[in-house]
Amino acid sequence: MNDVETSRLLLTHLSWRFHPPMEVLACSVLEYILNHHPDSRDGLNDLLMRIVPGMRLSGMDFETEVTHPKLGRLDVLQRGDDGEGRFVIEAKFDAPLMSTQPVSYLDQLPEAGVSALMFLVPTLRVEELWPQLISRLDREGISYAQLEHPLEHPRCVRIDGTEKHLCIIDWTTLLDSMKEPLEGDEAGRSDLRQLRGLVEFAEARESKARLPGKEMVGAVVNIGKAGGWLATKTMKGGTYGTTRHGRYARLDRRYKLGVWLGINSRLHRKFGSTPLWVCCTDWSYADGQGWNAGVKAILQARMGSKLHEVGKQLWVPVIPGGGKGPDRYAAALERIVGILDELAEPWHSDAMVLEEVSRPYKQRVMNNVHRSEYVEAIVALALKASGWTHMTPWDSWDFEHKSGARLEVKQSAAAQVWKSPEQQRPARFDIAPRTGYWDKEGEWVRKPGRHADLYVFAWHATDGDTADQRKAGSWEFYVVAERDLPEQKSIALTVLQELASPCGIDALAAAVNSLSTRHQRALPQP
Image 1: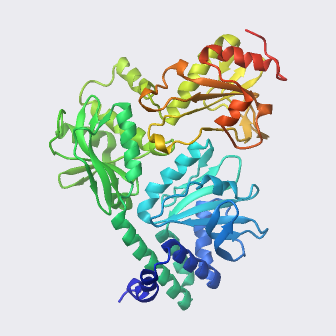
Image 2: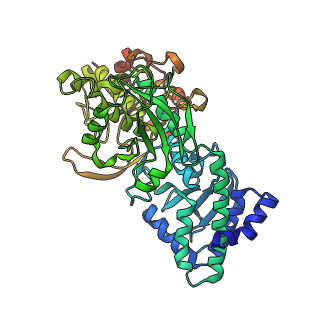
């Protein structure tokens, strides 16, 4: 009888018989082990320091089921030596995220010093919940930096202008970190085995009921369909299981190829590159050039050892690059579509190159990255005659006037490529202070605060099938002086509407220069 089977004789049996909420039971056992077997903290502390730079556990006890006046019940909390709640664990098995997670939880972390909000979830839910957490930061206009980590811990961000961190990790990794320090503590190892058995039991039940990665796959499919390079109407439905979730689709631009697109947890664990994979095979489908030796050859030439062959199946990893949320997976998949397009027609003409570069900006509903660049281009054309210069992407503000005044552009839209209308929330814009800026000589100037004098907030209100973010006239703009903005990290559209009246693109230059004449850096009228 192995360790896990032994543990099921007691704790797991009781959990099944008395039906307490599984998260509550698991967190109670975790809190007990950390408080009654101090050596177990060494492993957790080492893991935490690898994920969150500068973060260390304090000497305070862990608390569970902590009542918070604004957030309700916190699963696990450890306070710092100063009494502030610096490390919060929110555990999930099959429960969805609460509406207040993670934004309100991050707001309650201390403003000074290193702190962390950690989501502790089953392995199969890491790739499902992390994009949701990041998308909620994006939706609220909260800026953050992706932290560099070893391969096994890539999911942690630091909120800009703070030492607050948001991260996610699976139960197995956490429990593995606590095992070795308990080598000489027989009672501690026995308690840890009990918890591991409980977790494996809960995850086994959860994996039978949940389709891992369903939301992320759906988001990528929606982006591809909106972009015109992926089709699903003529293809079969999805496939489901404990290690896979996906659906059949057709890569559908110049070269048309039927594929299976989805989460493959087995390949993710084996190769570690990405959870999202494309499977190319020789099944039949409608209206396309289809599978042939050329498909394998060109993917092999361009992607090399990243491909994995299993029988007649060719598995192609969708490895994300920069960006946030499902957008970055969709961008990676579109690059694969571009490789296949080379089979349909020569790719090296100037017209083809320009078409490829401009393609992301020709979508009726753009992703967050390209929409931001598109709006800046609209504003640049509107302000060009008034003496404003569009800065480079690495500058610390977007526009600078010949008088020296600085202007920042923020944008948001009701229509998002990977969110359904019922998921939308009121728009917010990032106005968080920064720690410094780059000067004209390329030197970093450490000066906390906001470094633009004026802000232009662009809002695209149309949602649904009529939304077209490419039309400059469909945007409305709010021009606000920095000194009139509240001292907070983000601002709601409703607050902006109290600070300024909206104007169209034709009136933007006049609105900017009208406000600037009342600013401490007076600008000449055009």
